[in-house]
Image (cartoon, rainbow, N blue to C red; front, side):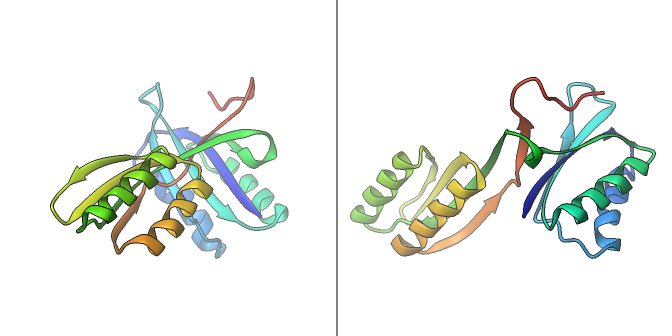
Length: 165
């Protein structure tokens, strides 16, 4: 099962490596990792996407709580949440028909073409991971992908539930 673990911790050097170390010591894979300061520059928020059973996530959550720098830990998958990711795709666009097709696909997926040359387009897309995966699957049938860059998942709980100090 896919889990999105959100961690609020002190914005100190070494804090990120201690969190990641917990995963690597136990042989758990991190699919995506995003980290940035919050509205309070002394705190950072880490969002980790991993797959595993509930027992594995419970174990890692308990271990994270033991770290001195960690203030709060939340598995967003436990309740309704919103996730977003940004993706940039550089692809071939060397014919007029292909350029039209790429513009149409970008519109359908609510993406933007953010860079254009005679041969290439760079398309920006924001959405949940499933939407980005779907766009990639359509693009590989349409044109040659030269480069794909994804930010990793950012997530937030819906409603009153929040992760704050």
